[in-house]
Length: 188
Image (cartoon, rainbow, N blue to C red; front, side, top):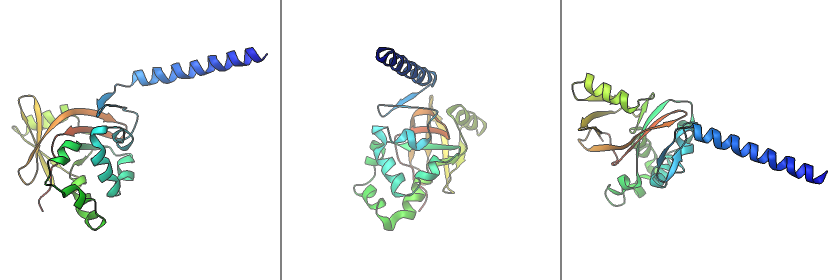
């Protein structure tokens, strides 16, 4: 009887493992920062696993935006990598993470977010309709200008700084992430 119970437990475990594996295989993941990004997970659930986005995740936590980015959305997030944050003047990130700079941090982070799900094909279509440029209204109330060079999509902020989309269409349960190589900032 004991052998039968052990055998049943093993069969059940293997069955659950196979079901989980099958579900994971059906999801079309994109690898970002060495981790698969699952379309069934939300923006925060995926971002915390990317080793390339630890600075962004720390900033989102410090800004109190975790709950917002876990909500239904949908959102389009232009997610700067750690290397993008490293391009900022020395000490900028540390200064922004201080509690007294909460509003500034929130403004900069929400400047990287557009309401709705705008995938790369949508961006290309908007750019074409706009004769080479598309204006995107950010959650912070600012604007980003999307444009293309060759087949790459770029964003220009209100200060004239540009950022390249390096990984597009990282689908999430509550929107989409486009990885970018520079931090964009609104007019001060």
